[in-house]
Length: 303
Image (tube, rainbow, N blue to C red):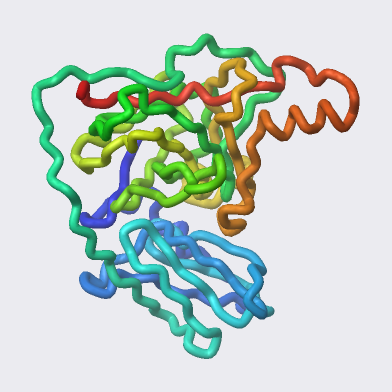
């Protein structure tokens, strides 16, 4: 497994296949860091028409976006750790630049106290006829409570793989709880954490987060994985790629998902809450194994 973050150069895992022959009708833009002139890896790009979202896509690991969309007025480019910026269609050039966000982080003291495991990583997994998958554009999130009710340092995040198809790329999000709704709010990460999986990967995946100094808010956090696409062994896009992870049975309203990253806050669906509404609407019980949530877990510093 590999991790990318924006303050250092990375190896081109996916090779030169990103620069394969493109359609004569397509347009290619390169998204770069304004200060360093380095690529902004896997930046999110939203296309707008008359102030409404038309579609969206991701740049690749080299900051390259190749697109054929024509019916739009402007694009919005964003990435964790950078200022979001809009570009009118007439101002889109081959190279576009984002400025890094300057954030003053509070000093986090890492002491010798033990790590404590919270969340659902050790819940008994349920066997499903069809597992829920992370594929391109899809985000799956889960709310984990803070049992200490005071800020504590997050040391790592874990989940357990069932199956990997292709070489999927995914982004980690740590969202505060929304002020008024039970959905993800502000992302508290200040670096863009993007990871890859090999087809041979299996079992426990643990992502070390201690160096980023991220605190678990007193009222808990939404952990989310976002699929950025998948690639075959030659670095070509693999539309069937993705990965599945272990789930457990629960009817709590802690599991959310959305199918398009550009849907914004309104795109989040509380899965078990939706199933309960479906039960009421249809007037019959839904199969009990439909009420599930991911076996996500956190290690945090003992307060």
